[in-house]
Length: 321
Image (cartoon, rainbow, N blue to C red; front, top):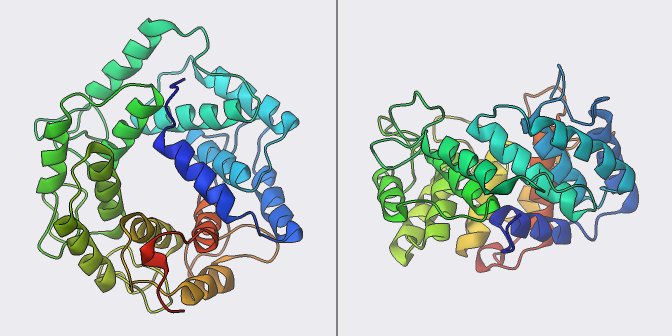
């Protein structure tokens, strides 16, 4: 794989460092929950069904964050990753496959791209470019007519995992600029008028990767995130959603830290929300207060929020409790 450290790997190391002080018994509860969702083929499932690359990616990154990827885990998950190499993958499955393979490889498992050859990498790049749209972004599927902010971010991450750069990056930067709205945030697709926390986080990360972020944009994003801050202590998905959720809290919190935005979140309130309302004492996290059960995706976000609380190095996390 690429010799440069990809964004997802840097983030993984950062999150693992943030959980370094977690109590061993608490760590083990969440590790056991994640492993309880592993299937006989080595992959992981969501709340039901069979192994799925999407959920496997979250489970593996969660286990890595907890320091729970040992030799046995790498062998079983690596078997599933190698088996998936022959499948025809959509973009979101492709990045799940690559990110899972990278994490497992670094923990001692097999390299999913070993002996793949440039032809295989070229075919993956062609798949990515087949979703590029006339507006300069990337759609969810090859049939998409308009670019998606989130999927454009995923494509950029995937190119990075392949050791390549996004073609025509200036077109992609302009695409992201065009997704900004008057409230300072960003939307997922062009027709939308109301910004969302998650597309804003994706847009911000993508612009930072491509060198398109500036101080004016940072101020705009800070203004938007101040508006979608929930009463519980986390972030809402958008201004029409009256409650915070674990996913939006993680992406918003990460953006606050990455941009060094002061005074937006109060760490003690974030911790009270995540640990008091989303974390199950038996292990795992739910998505929001209305949710009835934990799953591997929201457990990753729950652990991620605790990790960001434990690794507050940016100016934006240095506000009063």
